[in-house]
Amino acid sequence: MTAGDERFSLTRFLAARPDLRSKLGAIKAISSRVRTNAFQLTRECNLRCQGCWYYANKMDEGIEDQAGLDRIREILEERLAAGITHALVVGGEPAIYPERLAVFARTLPFLSVATNGYRKIPRDGFEEVSIGLALFAGYRSDDAYRAIAAGGQRFEGLFRRGLDNYRDDERVTVVYALSEEAIDEIAPSVDMIEQNGNLVYFSYYRHYGEDPAETAKATEALLERALEVAQRYPGTVLSHPYYIESLIRGETPWGRFGYDGCATISSGHPANATRLSSGRPILPGFESYAQDLTTRRLCCASGDCANCRDSLALSSWLLVNFKEHVRDAASLENWIGFADSYWRGFAWSPLHRSKAGREPAAARGGEAQTGATAFVA
Ligand code: SF4
Ligand code: SF4
Image (cartoon, rainbow, N blue to C red; front, top):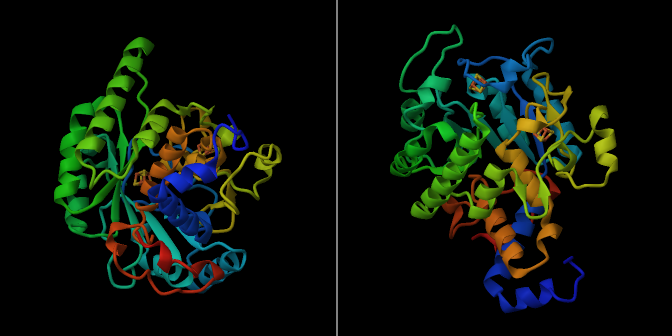
């Protein structure tokens, strides 16, 4: 069934469901204000995580950091003039360079930063910044994957350190990469995050066992547990069941996630020209930049599409395919529930729990800042 099919009318459905109509209005409002570009801020990192695609793909080589603060401001002003309102800053480790981050925070309306949690991003000057704090596999297993210093020495307590840095910090959503290897750690990890006053959004690090049948069984068990934990901690786990299932299965009833439909490819990268000509949607104006902040990367992640379950990429794929969900009540309800939960994950979003009942932050420039007040959740 399609959007135009007589058997399902979006207008009729929304007229009967004012709760969903109001949510959809809020989602559309924030979606229209946010135009994202991703930036790898630096080639430096204080860690060397196992499975880090940035270093595994030698993205730190051959391109220097853009370290000039005035030049960073100029670059961002150019992006702002092109309609970009949101920077997603990744690494290396962005927290190593707060002075560069401060230029982002001052220049663009919205800033989100992905961090490993070892160093705290200060509050002063970063009050409205959304922080994605990494967790891999679970509170116990995380050290085995991530607590490896740049010099190769192992240490303990990285996730605990991140939690301590961001206790009761409403800016933080933990981005938790689930793994079949640590299913029993999901509930206690989420419990720790809840006790710490933060939110959590799931991503997925796929585990390949030697026996495909065993791996498939473990993946089903992972999905089941993730859904169960999301239901048990509704105030802390943002991820909607529809998203969790799409993330772990890598497919939905209307399509399989991969390069052909990926929404977070750089629109100006020549290698994406054929894909873009297919007309399948991407995030409007999306670009992903290397650490000089001007060289385009292929996409927001590694470029290894067969194994990609990047949470931004997966979420964006679902977001831009709204039309695929205007086919029946259940599909539409899933999309609205998912999109609402996605936007609640950013500290600067009017849908974030810290904004409930208060006016959104004052505009810091750009047309896209207008008209949010009516959409505070
Ligand atoms: S913290 Fe991030 S950039 Fe640094 S090694 Fe780990 S995954 Fe790579
Ligand atoms: S690696 Fe992931 S984000 Fe990059 S193009 Fe492939 S599917 Fe998209």
